[in-house]
Length: 259
Image 1 (cartoon, one colour):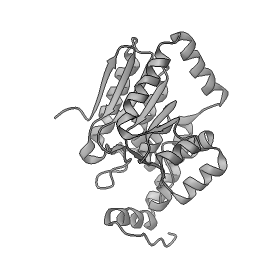
Image 2 (cartoon, rainbow, N blue to C red):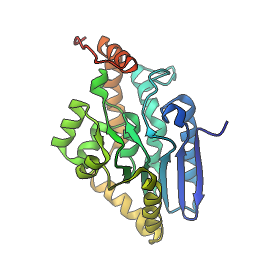
Image 3 (tube, one colour):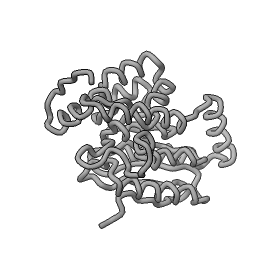
Image 4 (cartoon, rainbow, N blue to C red):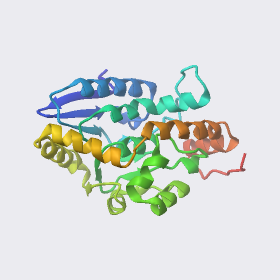
């Protein structure tokens, strides 16, 4: 079977592809381990000047696989096990080159978090984007509560995170989540064109500019993700989270009781 995540370079642009469309590119142990390897390969590739992250099928990534595991079996504390779910995606923070998310389809939960750590995002008009953690009885993860307000502003982030509402590509573009929303078949070509435009610029200046932007915003994404992991682990132990996950799998409305 082909790798769950592939890395290849096309000229000066690297491409990481999540390739488990039959499972919605969800965060299984197999996919997370393969993503870590692909991210390391991109980091080690000194020939690239920009990187594109994309997926195959109808989902960019649907986040956790609730039929499988939603914490990594690291033998550590519950919060560390929650954080370990996101650590492979957060490894993108170690790349100095700009990252363009080619969100070919739905990006939900942790998959939405993966999109947010990209520097720019191109998405599909009819796909759904967002973090529905509260609808599942869970606190957010992947530093989403930290990144989203910095991208769309506090009032809009409050609405999206507290309601758990998903938005389509058109609204995501209007909110500033997406730089561009295009038909699904055009997502990767448009993202590649954007990445190639960046790669044609002076590479030292581009890397310095990305670093300056992040430094100016005082971005501490990993620290935020670790803090989120504490609350997420606590909510994962509640009856409400068990109900929320069960309702999702059974395709019904959850009945939360507050414990």
